[in-house]
Length: 176
Image (cartoon, rainbow, N blue to C red; front, side):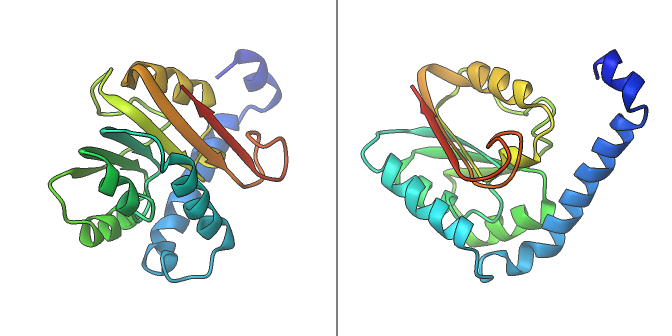
């Protein structure tokens, strides 16, 4: 943490840690209802992601914030392999039960910390509706540059209020 921030908000580290634990607890509690509950944001994301990636070839995918595997189900129909990372154990349990394939591995991890995957391994990284829960955005983009192969692509969708969207609205980004 920046010393200047620590001076103005002495408990910032505790607050961020507490908020992250609260977010994880909420997603763990939501997991059993996540796929069935009406969610226009998630439903729109699913449509947009498929449309935007349908004409792109990809083989090895890293999915950050994979949740219950809503997007994983479609991504794996086009990919040779996929690793899905998420901080919610219960969401990952749903994904593992739903998607039983040798082509997929799910790993519980905090995306704000180092990811347990090899560098220069992926030709596509997908991040959907996840960045609003990340406290270290610089870490995400540095790690993406390390984990993607040369020429790899990323697809990011953020549709909640957050520093990512500047306060409100929808943001979408791609890079090759």
